[in-house]
Image 1 (cartoon, rainbow, N blue to C red):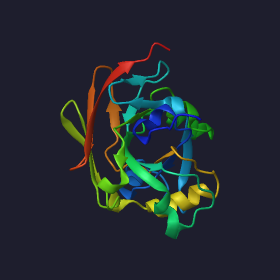
Image 2: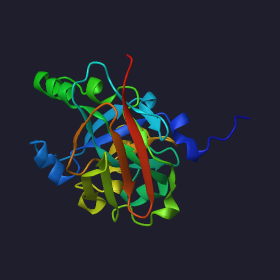
Image 3: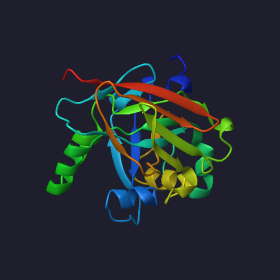
Length: 221
């Protein structure tokens, strides 16, 4: 028999990282983007995971790396076309996550109408906190998220401000992509995204739940 896969180390075996863009109105405005009528989706590979204790890496081709603070939702079982009313039954827990973004690369991709893979999918582009069991967060839409760079507060937001709710997002994604145990959904970032550089220290947290710390390093590749 195969050894059980502990959710506490989801980054070692989870397959898919499905990300939702433009899910907070203030962030849509700061990016001068159009408001979505449906969730905007993109993917990160599993090699994007960077658990606490490992560095955030600046790709060699990136000149402007931005932090985007997000609540991650971890799936506890396989789901295909999950009804919105039952969606939370598929959730095993949560993690605080960073969607590190090569902003200059993304801007060029947008201009050319190209996918965002180079801007979003590079190695260590998804730093994550420790696993948070579902029981520790009775209401994921009542959380306060924050992020500091070198001690300066950069991002602060409340999950109650999401445009699309977590049950809606799970249901929507699962009609397109079959979700599996260990998959992670990033639910969007509040306003305040901004640049980080080599040797910066990023601290982030969910008030009363979890915090994490990462150092920024330049990738060798």
